[in-house]
Length: 590
Image 1: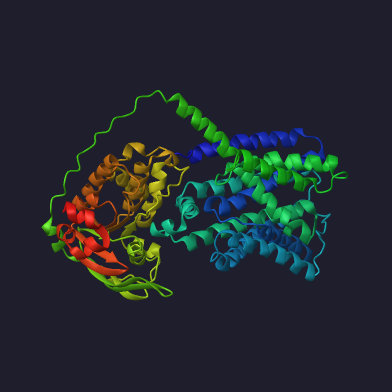
Image 2: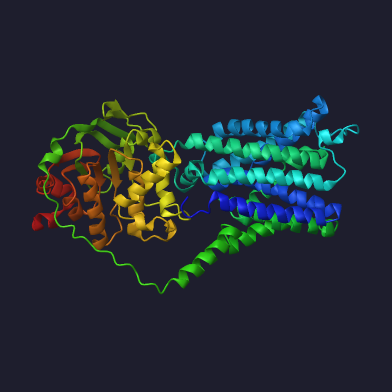
C-alpha cells in the first residue's frame, strides 16, 4: 500500500533479523546471555502486543500486564492443577488474553484520553491483589523428569531462545498484516480523529474491540511463555507496573505505530537494563527502572515518536534536499468564472428531506424546527452568522448528534438514531472544518480510509481511492506523504477521502477555509466537476463570492432557526438576510 514497504520486503527484513538472532543464540556460550536473548524476543513480542492496540489506534494502555499476567497464570495453573503441557497452555493463554481484552474493552472504550489510560491501569493492579487473595502468591511450575520436552522443560537454554524467536516471528507477521490491511487503516483513522473515522464509515467500536482482542491474545501467549522461563510465578512478577511500563517503553523508544519499533526498543533496552542490573543491582536496586525512565526522557527530548521514525525522517529529509533543485511542475489554473444558473437543479426528485429538526444543549436551542428539501444533483448552500447552528445541523444530518426532535429522511429512510458510520454506508459523506490528514501515510493511503466503506475487497477499495484522487486532480500526488501537503492539497485530499466512499450526498463544512483566492478558484473548479457528475452537495461556507458561484439554492440560518431560503440572487437581496448576516456594506454593493 502506497508509501509502506511491501509485505514481501518485510518478510525479507524479518528473515535477515531472524538469521542474525539465531547466529547470536548459537555462538553465545554463556547461559546468562542466552537468557538475555530470550528476554529480548519476549519483550519485543510484548511491545508488539501494546503497539497493536495503542500504537495504531492511539488509545494509550497502562494495563497490558493484565493480559500478560493472565497468560502466565493460565500456563502455570494449568500445569499445576491439570498437568496441562505448556505446548497446549500457550495457545490457551492467548485465548484467555483475547477474551480478557474483549471483557476489558467493552466498558473501557466508552472512555477517552487519559481516562482510558487510567482505567486500563486499574486492571492489572486489581488482578495482582485478586491472585494474592486467592493464595497464588508463589506458583512453582512442577518439573517432569520422565518427559521434559513434552512439558517445555529443556536443559539447553538455546531452545527457549528459538521458541521465543518463533513467537516473535508470529507476532511480527500478525502486526504486519494489520498494518497493511484495512484493519490498520481503520485503527490509524481512529488514532487521527475518531469522529472523522466514523464519518468515513468506520465502525470504531468494532475495530477497537478487534484490536484489543488480538493485542490481548499476543500478550497472553507471551506471558504464558514467560512463566515457563521464570519457573516460579508471582503476582508481582507478571502484574506489576514495571511489566506494563516495559511493554509501553520498548514500543515508544523504538517507534510507535510500526511493527519494527518494539523490536528496535527491545533489542537496545533489554540488554542494557539486564547488564546494568547484573553489574550494579546490588549497589543500586531498581536500576532497571532507572534505565526505562531514562529511555522515556531521551525519547521525549530527542525522538518523540521513537528511533524508527527519527531515522526515517532524517533519510526522507536528505532525499528531499537532494531533489530541491528540481524545477516545479507548472499547473494550469482554470478560470472559475461565474456559475451559470441551473434552474433544472432544483427540479429533481427529493433525495433528502429534513422535517422539523431541532437540537437543544441544556437550555440552549442550537437548531430550532428547521425543515427543507434537497433535490438530487443540487448544490445547497447553508449560510448564516457564526453560532447560527450550521455545523450542528450537519452533525445531525450525519449522526454525530441525535436531534431533540424531527426527522432526516434519506431515500425514504429516517436516519435519526444511526451512528455516523451507518449514515456514511447509506451514502452520505462529509468533510470537516479542519483538515486532519494521517501525516505519515501517503495521499493514496489517506484516501483508502474512506474507500473501504463501500468496497468488498482491497482491490476495489484501491480502485475507488484512485478514482477519487483523479476526480480532485491529485492522481499524480498519490505517493506523496500527506503531512507535507500544502493547505489546498490537504483540503482536496479530504474531499477525495469522502468521494472514495461513493457517496450520493456530500456534506462540505468550510472546505475553502484558509485558502487564497487562486486556491479557492482551483477548488471551485473541482467542485463544479462534481456537480456536473450528478453528486448532490450541501456546503457550509463563509466565502460568499465563492458560494454565489457554487450554490443553486441557499438556506439561511440565524440563532438556529430558518431565516429564509431560495435562489442565491434573491437571498442576497433579502433585507432580513442582509440585516442578520451580510451587513450594510453588502446592501451598498448590491
